[in-house]
Image (cartoon, rainbow, N blue to C red; front, side, top):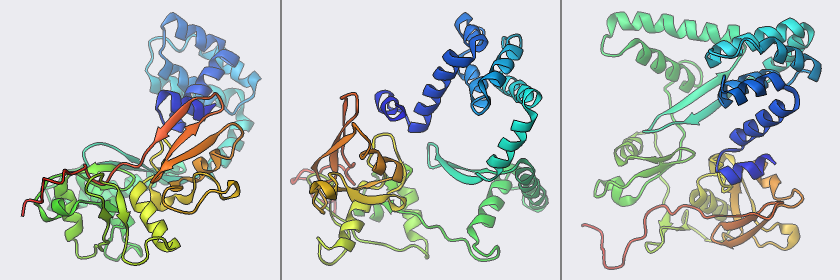
Length: 343
């Protein structure tokens, strides 16, 4: 159901999950919160704060929290509502709260969220006391640097220290980035200003691609494209059909998971068949694509089918009979034959 909603609304599977989860919780076991939503006392975003913090408690506890919150919803901001719900959950389910806290501390992780205009957000899901200590350490060092370097704000110092500490593998070495950037040769030379592509992020300006390419630690790989379509023909020297070069070609061509709405970079995804090997799918660039683990397994679920339409493109049919077509984006816009390079 989550995957169906994600495709129907053109949102990520995480957003679709929250929509389904919130709807089920409101109708099933949060009647007071649903009534407040229907009256217009709160919106869906505020209602989701109640459903999210009660998702792991029993129906009985959820009902007690919902009743306790009935007079604590109207006229309050989302953060205030969340704090009140958290307080109520601890109040009515102290033992369960402690067990869930211990489980969540074991789920610590780091996530990456891409934003606009060459920026991204790197977040850590950490125990509160650890996260607070890290931030305090960054702030303390940033304040020291700020005393002697007024050219950067305190936030800029804090962000730069954060990056320096993470990129230096042993804590003292020189930071080195490992990213995949796809850039047209004409843009690389400065003859054009077409956007390049940063894997997992999307378009970045030509000036940034040239800065990355000019870094002494950068390595280059040749990608040969069809000028008429912009699609990739070859990803490295050597035999075009060999397994190693085929995998390189697919990762370079797809750049990210090919399932609609999923943007996991291809270098962190799996290379697999669209029509499975068990169903006599061929191992070539027409029937192979990059897919994250979740969406690679999804096509094996009952009612889900995928059909290749050539060069990594495919049509997905869902259990409800809806179809969605996906095609790898070309590495550059098609170029007319009568439009030679400007040199």
